[in-house]
Amino acid sequence: VCRLVVLISGRGSNMQAIVNTVRDHALPAQICAVIANKAEAGGLAWARDRGLPVHAVAHRDYANRVEFDTALANVIDIHQPDYVLLAGFMRVLTPSFVERFNGRLINIHPSLLPAFPGLHTHQQALAMGVQWHGCTVHFVTPVLDHGPIIAQGIVPVIADDTPETLAGRVLQVEHKVYSNVVRWLAEGRISLNSMQRVQVQGIASRSFVL
Ligand code: GAR
Image (cartoon, rainbow, N blue to C red; front, side, top):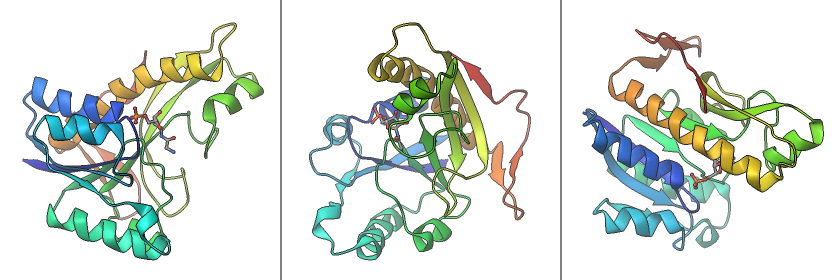
């Protein structure tokens, strides 16, 4: 089975979609742990209630990013994961952490990268007037929100959208995209090659529409 560790910072709806898809489709995968950088992250309680191993590694308890990332990596390593899935994990990771998990670290970002890296992506999209928006699942590299793209999902922008209404629509396609990526990982269909390119086997399309 494919061993997965999921990192969250808040409500964890993407984590929940991942947990549910592994169970509903009996994927050859196991959620070994859910880890949050805040003890009060809502998703942590949800995972604990379902009997999943959970850890809080509170970034506030560490003096700097290097110390936090070292503690985080040590907790992750207990579970020997094949993949570490960032699902609404809102801490920037140090290059040494990213390199340690090279090819095994995956993130979901709420925009069609390379458009709108960083924060407030829905506000950025509305300000730019784009008519399509969406999400990207990608391998993590040391450059923030710039790693090789695994899959993307699109949604229309609608008149009178606010950042909140648009975020809600994007979130629905996020769950669809991340669930499918987890299925591909579990089935061993996706990898990052030595040229840092995404290699796929037997996947016709990596694009999704809400
Ligand atoms: C999601 O929209 C995710 O794409 C975004 O945070 C939200 C978390 O929601 N991630 C980032 O902005 C990463 N920089 P969730 O906790 O319900 O999955």
